[in-house]
Image (cartoon, rainbow, N blue to C red; front, side, top):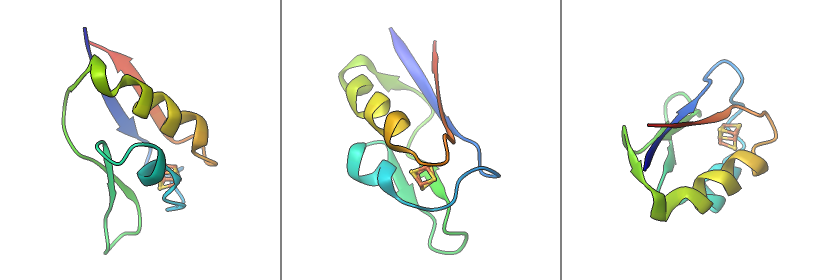
Length: 67
Ligand code: SF4
């Protein structure tokens, strides 16, 4: 199974916790100071990073959807 990760850019406050928990999945846009998701679809091998980032996001801006 694969999954998709989205960030609600209205909720995202640029705390960057997601980069620490999910370095393969996220970056921060230097212009907007909001999170960027580094792909449209991810393999199960990255699930734990995605779940950790979701738990660690203080703004609860990260959403995971199974594909
Ligand atoms: S941890 Fe949450 S609020 Fe912070 S940059 Fe990532 S998505 Fe945005």
